[in-house]
Image (tube, rainbow, N blue to C red; front, side, top):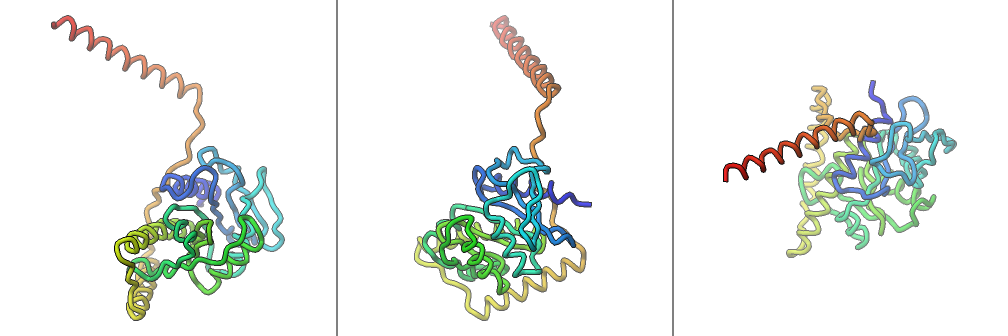
Length: 260
């Protein structure tokens, strides 16, 4: 059985390593099956220090919190999204550079690539301060009609998925599309797909995913593992290897001098 708390930690590290978040920015959550709750990353904790026990549980109906830490300040945003989208089981909020730049410009990423039709068009929803109920309402409304990603004006991105793997894949794709859109605009303008082509691409993606699901094909689980705490044994082994390496270097230098 998959440990959802560990998966959230791995997902948070993946976002950091992919350059989609820095420091303690962004947040990740997963709906708990049949529990009426969701699990979410804590507030103000560096992802490199995060452990499974730091993940916080939030009651979907009441907002009651269970855990040793405070939930992300954006927990209400996640709660509202789960309320309006029963098909969503994972939410990722990140601050990737290109997508955030487009949100600052208050632009929409149109249907520009066939393979991007799973998330495009990606609109920028109206500005609301971070961590506020207004932001939660605005973002969830932007996703309520079935969109899988929205840009938060002057803030960042929210991406959803049927599971955490899908939400992460879409998170990476949003930033890739944003980068291509910015570059295309810079060299003369991004030409979106025709309406018929966008409809065809969306249909193709739905059929492709359905076929993969029927074959029970899952994407590789290659998320990075959390960094384990350093033990005394690790330090001893590291020190021993360092001295061996140093001794070997000195020995080589002495031999070189003697040969001269």
